[in-house]
Image 1 (cartoon, rainbow, N blue to C red):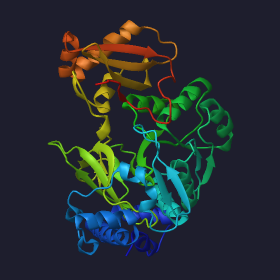
Image 2 (image 1 turned 60 degrees about the vertical axis):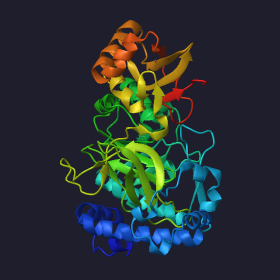
Image 3 (image 1 turned 60 degrees about the horizontal axis):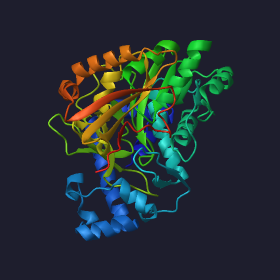
Image 4 (image 1 turned 45 degrees about the vertical axis):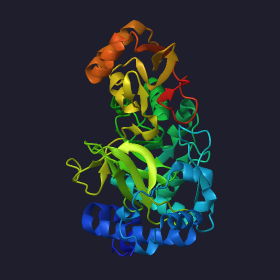
Length: 440
């Protein structure tokens, strides 16, 4: 029995309300048993219908009918390159629509196919998440997601349809224009990229924020100091969601407790592979209800870890993961040591003069590694030496070993801090935090 069929049998409420009831009340063992059953069905389905999985299973001697658990597949995974090279080989049934990824590490996007029914299914799970955040049919939602080949806008629209609430799609227009045009709709829920929502907040700081009950950001991480700033201006909660086009929308979403992402177990089976001593590893997922282009053990490229037990603040059960530590492909070996984006967030987070966007580049200066910390200055701030001292103080506290190497410098490396005007570091939709420019 599918999760949706189980939910539809409940004799009360709307689909979103029923889904939230199931997620928050039904024992984990029952949800896990349904997920494992759907995992096995997915393996058998792709083994019969997908040219890619047919070939790969045959090469590895995998019999889909004998797979009971993910561990039975051994070291078999699906990668981003697999999809990028020939997405049509994954297609099992005729698609109705497609979306593309917007990653930071490749110029060629990944194309992912779906059916309109799968869009509706994703909308239903999104509606469950919105219900959990307190969004109801009488609320009015405005979205500023980019609609160009991106999945977030269409999924949010489908979620609002399932929930039965008002929805207006503004697209990723300039924040001042959004402010002027959307305010009169009586919007009380605003959704968009965190960096764009920060820009809208700057407008609201000058012109005044109207009454809003909730803001939701998706598509990138953000510093906690930035979240606090946005919440202070709008006087409401700012909730983060985490997703990928390959997973078709939200993989997980925070609750109002903001203590990790609650995973979309309705539609995905999750694993964390190659965990370190603290449990951090790469998140892997298998889609459970898609039939146009299912994915088996897809490597997300994101580093995180499971959070054990129910949320102590919200009481919600089910699987949770921590905020992402970074990307597998953004770990970079330097004379400073191994560096990754998550290491630099606490260095910049308490410095009011620095904006949300920053980037670390690694280059060569003769035989030395040159580490450049690029930061955007907020409007009106020019005291670069003061900011430089704050960065070094934070680095000494948060990354002492790296700080010592940077302080010694000499024959090992050079580190410099570069200042930029607001809005100049970000070229595309996402900002790559670590850029390695070295030519070996």
